[in-house]
Length: 554
Image (cartoon, rainbow, N blue to C red):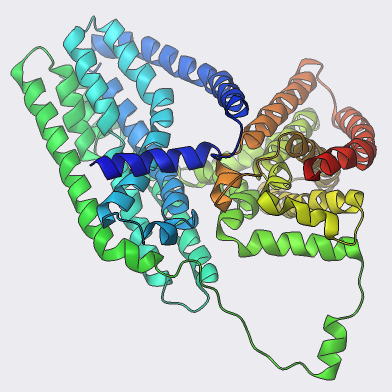
């Protein structure tokens, strides 16, 4: 057990910073990250708690107040499972530290358990947003006693385990069989995509499940009283029903029995995870750093073609794009994010009944001249959020890591190197934007003139976020990392960029709605202002940015 705890601490420390970095700098970054997370998620948690306060009174009148706990715990479990697919894939497979741990005196369950514990700790932050407001608001409204909150703490600590076990086992099964391929990186990407598609499929199924109940069935459940809707709310993860029963029966022995049963089920899930992990995980992770190469004899014409002189800027952009596509963790978190947002937008529509009518309503809204200004502003806000969340420009310097000194030996100006990194983000951002506009043309019948205006303002927004991202990374580069995951997933710069972009996008939409701007007025303001800003940022990148990069390398 001591080795397990020690390894968990090491994995957490290496994930939040490098042992070689200065302690004061690490503390400052930790404090800033904490403040940013609080600022970002406190309004969501407060809103969730206010909703529970409002819903409790109405449900209490018909004897259905415990459905709040049922739905709350079910929502937490589903969110943890969905994000657990990504977190487990990154930490178990893409962290690239397993082969360094295998020669050390650790048992298999030490390594698997420590990695699982790291994922679990991250998921506790998700629980704080959804579970904590639920448990506190329900406790206050129901005048619960101390025992209720004691049970709540235990359930808070154990609730994420079952969803994470399911997510981890799915990943292990997929990655176990993708490891047989010669090109391991390519097949690991396929495995990651399969796991992601599975998570999206589960999301669609859950939303369809909620639509399959007739009004008569729901009315009958409400009429029964006695919290009969709890069973409905906890069908997705049966263990949550036991947790709810323990919380609503804290005044009698039934609550204690349900709590013990919940603990037993959780421990059984952990045992299953360890047994399946020993059978699947290490066989799937063996040789994770191995790669293959093609040996091909080039003809004289092919040699001339492959060695022909080309634009240095073009070559550097291609190099950046190849690195993003070839590295699994970069592909999953940087490249794929450009194309996932349209999918996430369509899921709520196609997962419900009457999807065609909703699409028709949205199409009429977009085709209306009075609302086209809001649509244009909303599209601009969406694109700057989507482009900054891909973390390409925001980690452009950080991805160099300890090899950042190599940039000074490349026969290319610093300004051109920085612009190549910016343009690689712009290229992928534009690809994602074109996917969104094509979907809009097909499903929403957006007018061509509005689509063209969307593309123009979206382009200015993507360029803006790319410049902002690389400026943030130049000033606060995360160069001390041992795995690619640390450069992306645990980089404070990404969060800073997202917060800035959300604020600017929200401000843009607010101004358009408040002043009721027309389509052409909205376009003129956004295009002119951000075009000027982009030009200024381009100039600053070639002057101040070069100076900062030179200091980083010195």
